[in-house]
Every structure is written in C-alpha cells, then in structure tokens.
Length: 408
Ligand code: ATP
Ligand code: MG
Ligand code: MG
Image (cartoon, rainbow, N blue to C red; front, top):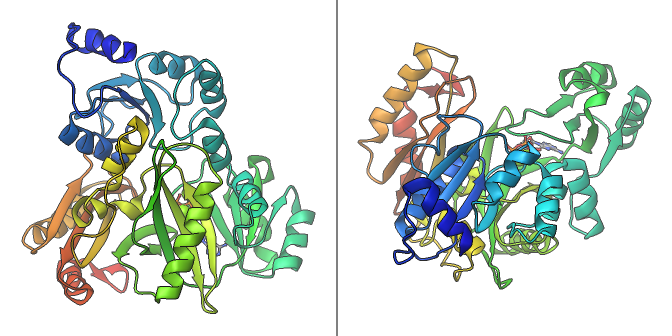
C-alpha cells in the first residue's frame, strides 16, 4: 500500500514493509477529539496505524496517534494533503468539508463512510428530509426563514416548539425551545438568527431516549449493539444505561428503525442512531451520527468488541466483531466540565477518586487542554452483575457531587 509506505517515511524515516498489524491500511481520521483518541487506543491493540488531522496541537488524540497533522479538517487543501497519507479516510466528527471528500472520492480516495453520508448528516434538516423520504418515523419538521414561517410552524406543531440550527450542532448547542409564540424571537436570536439556517421540530413527548450503535462492514454486513437508554441533562448526554430497560417489542422496533436508517446511508463504519420512545410505544428517529458515539463508550468495557475497534474493523475491511455484552449491565457517566478553574477540577477529582475504588468502574480522562463548562472531559463506565447493582455503585460514586442535579 503506497499510502502506508509514505507514512513510514514521514514518521520514522524507514520503508520497512515487513512489520504490519492486523491491517496494512493506514487509517486517517478527520478530528482528534476524545473519539479519535479512543479510536487510537483500539488501533494500538491491533497495531493498526491511525493518523489524525486536527487543528489543535495538543488535541486528545495527539498523544497516542501514530501521526498528527496539525490543520483544519474544514480546509480543502489541508484535507487533500492529509488524504495522501491515508489508505482509508474516516471521521470522528461530521462537521468536515464534505465537498472536498466528494472531490477526493472522485479521485479514487477511499472514504468510509461515504462523502454522501457526511453531506446528509452534517445538515440536520437535510438529514430529516432524507430519512422522511426513506419512511423512517421521526418528529414532524419544517424549515423556517422568518418570523412568519416560524409562527406558521408553531400553529401547525404547537408549543413547546424545538428550534434547531441545521449545521454545526453538537451537545445541544444548536437547539432552543420556544414555549409559546412570544418566545419565538428570543429562541431564534439565541441560535444566531434566521440567517444561520434554522428549522423546527414538533416536540417529541418521549418517555425515554434510546440509542442503537449499528456497524456496517465493507461487505455490507450489518450488526447492531444492544439498545441503550441515554439520559440527557440540558440537552447533553449525561448517563447511558446498557441494556435499556424496555420490552422485547420496543427493543425489536428500535433495532429495526436503526437498521433501516443506516441502510439508507452509504459506507462502512459504526453509526449511532438516537431515538425517542413515546408513551404510546412509537419509536422516532432523532438523529444519526456517522461515527463512534458517546452512547457507545460503555462498549469498551461491556461488549466483546468495542465500537472503536468495530469502526476500525469496518473501515479497513476486517470482519466485524461480536457486539454483544460480556457483562449483564453497564452504566456510562460523562464527566462534564464545571466552570473554568478549581471547583470543576476539585469535583472531578473527588468523583474520580471514588470511582477508582468502585468495583467494576473504569475511568477515562481525555486530557483536554482546558476545562470549560459542560465540556466532555472524561467518562466513567461501571459494569456489574445486574442493573440494580450498577445503579447503586453509581449512586455511591455520585453521593456528594449531585443532589437533584445540583452540586451538593
Ligand atoms: P448531540 O450531542 O447528540 O449531537 P445535538 O446538539 O445534535 O446533540 P439533538 O440530538 O438534536 O442535539 O438534541 C439534543 C437533545 O434535545 C435530545 O437528546 C433530546 O433530549 C432533546 N430534543 C431534541 N429534539 C427534540 C424534540 N423534537 N422534542 C423533544 N426533545 C428534543
Ligand atoms: Mg447531533
Ligand atoms: Mg443528539
């Protein structure tokens, strides 16, 4: 593989072709955040080379990837330069330059998942249009361009009304809720105005949020991880429970919707399908991520094949691994940044200190250069012989930090 030789020369000044891991393909990842870092951790076990493109010199993946190119994954020339070094190009974030990926694909660069998938997913409105065309159940939605169309949406869908920006959304930072017609303008302004590109969704009166990680190999084989429950606070994922406590019927429905959604997209890799479960037993799609996802972090300790290993297997063309759980129950807890400065570190340190003494708990720290409020700084996964036991271990771990959602 020419790309793999190039990297050998650039990083080690050698052209050794004898020593290979489970795959000769050099995996190039656009983005070097915590997902990129955990991809590198999984790659290390299989001696697969992962190189990363990220603008931040000390991004989480930088310390452990094979090679880090410092540069923007949203800048065409940089992505093209990076692609020359890769056998396969993949992403840990969907907010990358899709037009460049399309151009590279035409030139023969192997992008997994496909550029078309990134293009659809990175625009949440386009994503909704795509899935509704494929008859995937989802909350009603409508584009808004001005106050008049926003009011029309409010009349049609009622309140509260979920307003979302089409692009560059993550961790709820592109969502605003208007509880009444009077709040429409302030919610729109909070998102940067109509010019940013907005659409609205009918409020989904969910009783639970679910997620399914779906893996697709290069041979189009598909495997699903067990359905999990995700618990969000202020639009950010805080807790993931695996398996979700749902009936067999809902489990099957959620898995079917997730598989159908992923089948409508192109390319290999893991995909996370976020779902709403309503009181009357409907499963509606919220959104899809074309990459490893926060709702799959527990798979590192809880499943035979982690989502990160699975993604690598998928994109380089190895057989997919067993996604089933090897432990009866798991809970993942996100360590979210407090305000900058000591209190955040203090709380995290106390939390981590206790986690280290809990049976079945594993601490992951992403080594981000700065703490910021609500930023994902790390996570803790607790596994155990039953959900009841894992829940009580979580309660023990959180006992001083969180009382009804507020620091004690
Ligand atoms: P992520 O970090 O998962 O990418 P995001 O910024 O893309 O998040 P969404 O997934 O669209 O945001 O929404 C975040 C959360 O807001 C959801 O998990 C859910 O709790 C809530 N939410 C989103 N859409 C709706 C809706 N139509 N009705 C009710 N709640 C919603
Ligand atoms: Mg999202
Ligand atoms: Mg989401």
